[in-house]
Length: 317
Image (cartoon, rainbow, N blue to C red; front, side, top):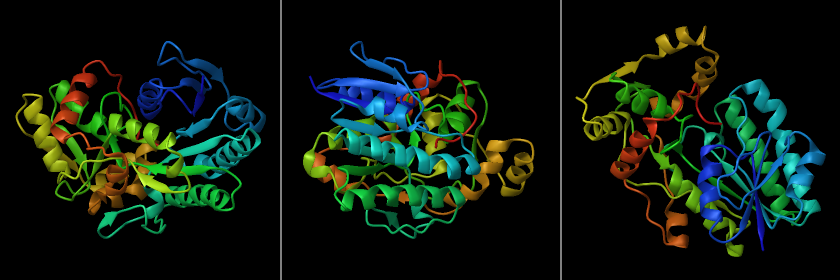
């Protein structure tokens, strides 16, 4: 039976991807402390910073999915992400394994209009520069014919189990605790969110389509108009809570960042919340025949899941 491997398993995207892949392949879960999602999963402990361990983790696989997250720290990203990407590419080359890299949109920087697969890299943050560099490394190898690969990007997450998402900490958990929802930046600005089950479904389908390789894709994401205020209003309605919203000004976030490292690290990404953030997934929708989950349905599922979800302390990587 075919074998497909998830590198950096245990996160919300790894779990959603695992559920989708189990329908037609054996899944190998790889992380420092891997856990099974499906009863048939293989578990393999490995550190992706170790080239030999990464190669061993990929051995025997038809497709490897790099969905790892690193500590949300610029210095860590600058030192470790290039090593993780290089180790993964070399492992896939060695074992003739296809590579699917699950990425975010930091490499694009601030974009006027909608982000598409053709949006050029113009990072305006240190973390964005790291993501642009490793994405370029992968696609240069793909174009050179050295590895069969693709990139799948998503907007900011929301959904069941997305404990590292902004909306989980500032909206879902607070409403469940009877508190007022919070936001950062401009609550009126457009902000698109990718529903995590939709992301997992997109990645699984693309990873098993030979014609999808050699390209960049955007995970299927709702085109419904959305902003911080709209998101909170909908969440309050679904949680049967009166509407209320607290917006933290930049000066307060900067002050809090002196004591909370993750807030300090997030300051360079504030442009994503102070300006419109539009993400377009038309290409994948047409290629796969998929329709994104409506926000009402997705937020309801996320609220139900947040009742028992552990709190978290930072954005996704």
